[in-house]
Image 1: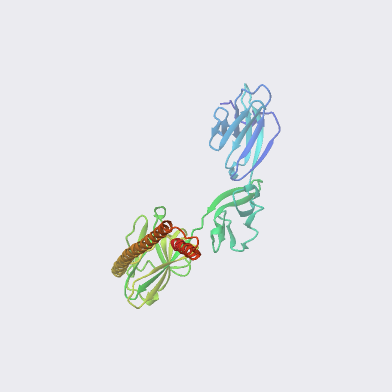
Image 2: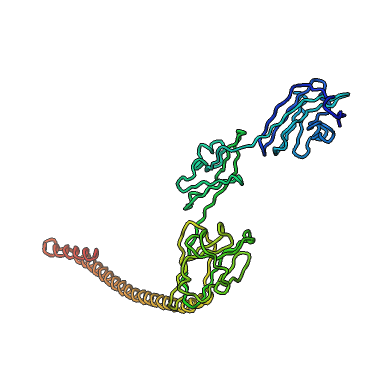
Length: 409
């Protein structure tokens, strides 16, 4: 540790005053130079009168709290970095070099300024260099299409609201803040838009209906809710009426709400879940006076839904009517298949008999023609032609030709 006098009157100043300023919440660097020959000497930064208790950091311990020191012996400059500046950091500092006798000091005056932002904005994508030029909305424009801008100066937070979300709105975004320091600050946001299945349910007057609402593990600490209204962010919570709306079957993934003794006034739009922003479902309840089971039919919208079930009693009634109908239909199909196979079997037998008869007739005709040709040939050979009788020769030739044509048939 350097040997320091009680007051600065005994301190020699090797250089002029160094003026440094920084911004609140940011870092600042204080660089101090020294002469050749002091490369291996201890350096330090102190405040006020530079007493022992005023020494903030030395090169013997390079990091201490918000302070960090680095000695560049080639350039003969040591630099102290103060991080996370506050206004009470402003004031007079000393850069010191330990040596025999009196240490060498350089006076430093630090000024801390408020880092006011001049503009806030949001852009799509993840490229900070072009974010401001491609901003979808800025603090100068409070409303732009489906986007609205709102900032709170007390909490230093700004919000951008996108109404009527679509799947095309999904993707990465950057929130940017311009600062006096010249370096913009960014925070990344990943927006995911999911589809929602809107369930239409028909309940019966005087009967109960059970709704199953999502309750994922990551939302377990959130308050479970069931509200009624046209919009999920502006609906009336009705869970306080425990007699009419009974909460039960709470698990790590869902919970159930039974609406007892349905009335016509219970019809309308409901939302339930464990998070009104991320995990909820939408239900359109219709109350009818006829005795019929609840039905569920999905309609695709642009919000998220997890699951929905109806009363187990209604499910049992539905199965009671459906199963006998399915079995009867299967029996009819088996009977029709048996009739078709039987008809095809008869057709094959009849066709086989006809084919045998036809083959038999063709064989008989062929044998008769063959016998006629042999007789004609025998007659021609055994009876020598009578050259003087031209009529016999002509008749014989005509007879053989007729036999030949009959054979070709």
